[in-house]
Length: 145
Image 1 (tube, rainbow, N blue to C red):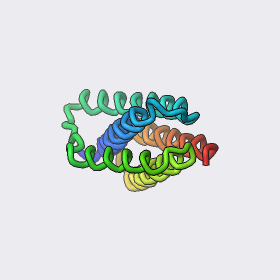
Image 2 (image 1 turned 60 degrees about the vertical axis):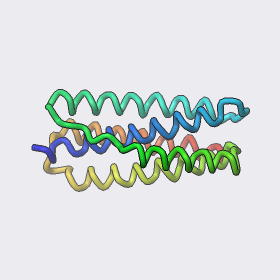
Image 3 (image 1 turned 30 degrees about the vertical axis):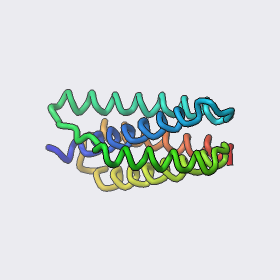
Image 4 (image 1 turned 90 degrees about the horizontal axis):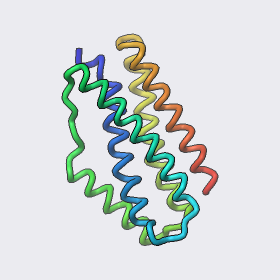
């Protein structure tokens, strides 16, 4: 039964971490004049929506969510602060996000391939939509390189 929800759990965890890191990034750029901020807000809204939808599906089916620990969030936050402090150009920020989203999209694609025949087709569809969103975000971010 649990494997039927691994895709939703993956989407929740990936979206949760993305929301956290993008929120931290937006805070760090608050007083800066970056053109990329609007795109960051749009990407954050999408990730938030996927996170909420995944959580609803998991909750509806009584599945427990493994929250990311404070250590991994703290490390991500420190990495963002370091990057922004050393180079807060739109290009640098875009590259950092492209790298992070790319890792997530590779994991999403792997999960889709692993579970394609074994899980609920709605979960596969949801995961493919999430993957498409990640790929679109990468494409939009590349405009800032």
